[in-house]
Amino acid sequence: MELAFVGAPLHSAKLSSASRSRARAASCVGRPHLVAGTRTLASLRMASESMNTRIDEAIKNAEDAARKYGKGSKEAKVAWDVVEELEAERSHQAAQRQSEDPLEQYCKEVPEADECRVYED
Amino acid sequence: MLGFVVTGLGRASGVRERSPVCGLSARRSGFAGSTMTSSTQAFLAVPPMSRARILRSGRCTSVRMQTSTMQKARHSDKAPRGVHADAAVGAIKSEVLQRKNIQRPVMVGVAADSGAGKSTFLRRVMRMFGSEIPKGHTPQGELITVICLDDWHNRDRQGRKEDSITALDEKCQNFDLMAEQLEALKNGFDIMKPIYNHETGRIDPPELVSPNHIVVVEGLHPMYDARVRKLLDFSVYLDLDDEVKIAWKIQRDMAERGHTLESILASIEARKPDFERFVLPQRQYADAVIQVKLTELLPDDKEGKILKVRLLQREGVPGFKTSYLFDEGSTIEWIPCGRRLTCSYPGIKFRYGPETFYDSDFSAIEVDGEFAKLEELVYIESHLSNTGTKYYGELTQLMLAAQNTPGAYNGTALFQTIIALKIREIYEQLTGRKVEPVVRS
Picture 1 (cartoon, each protein chain N blue to C red):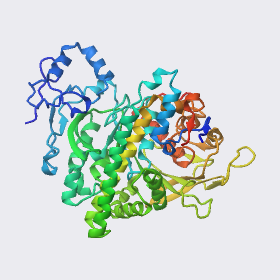
Picture 2 (cartoon, rainbow over the protein chains, first blue to last red; picture 1 turned 135 degrees about the vertical axis):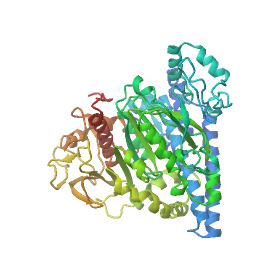
Picture 3 (tube, rainbow over the protein chains, first blue to last red; picture 1 turned 90 degrees about the vertical axis):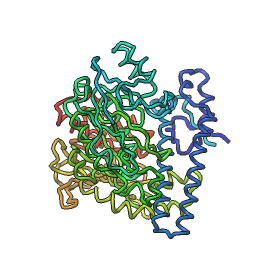
Picture 4 (cartoon, each protein chain N blue to C red; picture 1 turned 120 degrees about the vertical axis):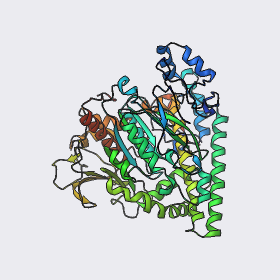
């Protein structure tokens, strides 16, 4: 069941990039200038997938270090710091992608527009 | 040996090119001064006006013309493994001082751990000084430049692993180079600043950063070193209570795969010792502190959906007129909900009053709760004074313009916007210049 929320502000944390891209593709039929800046669904997915995998590995690394050397050990602290750095970068890149997207910028200004309807998966 | 020579044309003869990210040739032009890559030659063949246009319109903002002599920074050898060997400082004042008519760079420091709302805050500040947010690793806009202090890490990720230190550790920053280069920038010189790449975890070749009207330095240690602290005209510290840190990290990182609640708690616990040793002590130097806590309006709300946010403002800072509610210097508790303002449960509560913080005089404004409709903020705005707005309603307009950002409906957005307005006001006070409001009434 798909629900459309008209006029609701876009909460990007709740949308997967897949559903947002689908919504974008569907809504940009008559607005080529809004499609111009978007990256392909595949490339977006790939970039975030590789980041996610690296973060998963880093978390496993950190948990192993904590188990091996102790929670308060230097090794555990350094390992968790790496995780934090990658996660901060992931969220920073996601925010960059968001702000570069002309559709997102348009929807920030006019959230009630038809193109900005939000579909929950 | 570093030694750019100014040719007879009056323009530098070499261009520092960044790593292949932008698709340009990765070959470094070296510092001998006389070698030029073919792209540089093509670049210089174009008459000066078009050259300037190419610079600004290019997607690749990392190619910069150096128009002054640069010399090796005094502290460029301080970093282990020679990672900052290419850092440089201009020998003569930058030409942008004249071109942009810069009176004197105003330097602002923003201290916060990652995940504390720094990026959202910085975007608000950048917006205050231009309708477009400049892009690039170091955003350099018409009026404002934002520098990430992580660029002065003296070890890359691998190096930190080998030496068993976190990025929070003071030993991991090249404070000597940071102080030298920031002072040079403040005094009107270009710098070749190192770059720390957060994705690869490596230290990239340096980039040219020129002075600007406002230079914001943000990161984990803006107020740690006394020499850097002395350069700051204004400083901000973003402070989160532990429970809020956990709640925000859950929101940011648990939505993605990989984290369980235990691992989130473990990562925060592991970070605590270094955070308390190296970051927290900087709070005492801040001119403005934004503190985010869990609400008092709801018993046992641990989710952090409703927040209590406090703005602490240091009294007596040049150019900084502290904002207040109703009556400056008095103590006020205010619940605006009633006949003129409809609030959804659990409502909104304001507090204002003088406060002693680390033995200094501060004034504190506090708001607990969420705004149901941002338009109602006009009502609240009418009771706040000294917010730094240039017209009645500007605060509300700025909040409305950013209503899709995190925290848009609570005190974090309100106080971040007020501090951004204050930075604009301080700039105008210190330089005598005027900044046009970006959002019109």
